[in-house]
Length: 483
Image (cartoon, rainbow, N blue to C red):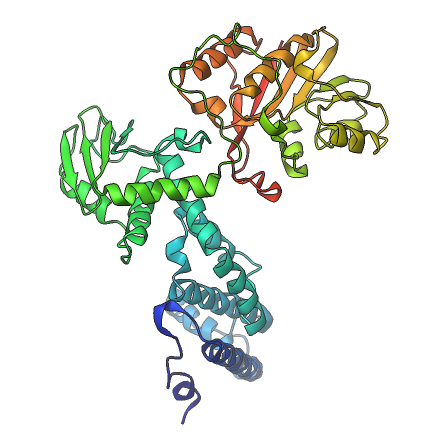
């Protein structure tokens, strides 16, 4: 039996996309044999090219440096291949190893079904890593460790992909207020008004593929990526604006001449599963909920009561770094941190030489922060919302409680403590930017009016799952305002 026959004699995979240990061992054995065979072949090439060089020296003696012009392009290509010009066995073997391992990882990802669990962004990130120079070696040890982790996170990967897809469909899905999909979503600028085809620079084609994948998996079917996209294109032939309607197993899409579209979800049972998945992914811990019928008066209805359960989630170091990245901080700057917790935002401010007044309502957390003895920091255990404002601070930095709309009260109170020219930076739920309740809209109108940089962008996204290490998947933004 040849070496190739040995490794193709049996499949080794199990049902339902699972991979047996024997199959993984077989893959590693075949990989090792392939690399050794490549090395042997490369060694033969090195020896052969050395022999060719000797032949060239002898040929030089024969022709004495005289030549004859032939079809130089054609002949040179043949001669270069025969002479192994620029051949470097080590470089070539490294490229072979990376290519082989990337193909093995791709095979396993598809064969386990994990690739179907990923959204386009996650698939692209995985593929980008495999195209780099540091492709992990596909040994039994690394394969086992990687796929144990991926299989353990398969549900999270699917939930994350679902949340990303619906956030791309409508930014309001980035919020954490129980925003749920219903029967229909309105999509602005799906198609170009001029061409009648997909809007240039848009990402909705990829989002539709992710939606198809999600609904198929929830329906217990094998995904058929691109079905909806191709159906829409078939219903919109030619060039120019037009109205069209497309129906597939899970969706109905009506596109209007202005390029906007309505997307209907045709399976209520799957819509319920999507909403359950969104709720599970985001969790119930941090609902930022302003009922539609709540009073929009953000001034008269402000409260000095603390948030329910004090709603504490420590600020991870990466979040603090990202929130403070655009600030110009000078030694001696006077900073207020009015929801200081155990100092997640205080410590990096101290590193910049700032003088920080830290306020924390919870006695144990206040004691923990005080016990750190950070230089230039004063700690008070009190309710910030009950303090009388005074314009003393160059900077107010906060990660306030999100529950209800308590964060609005904290931001407005913090604003009152700023000196003219001072800056406020607040880590907030994504709903602060995208929710459309009267109270949210009134708050954004206030922030846009009082801030000095009225034409700048007040909000910027923090990376998804920024707070995952403290137990929540809420999407967050950074609000920046200058007085």
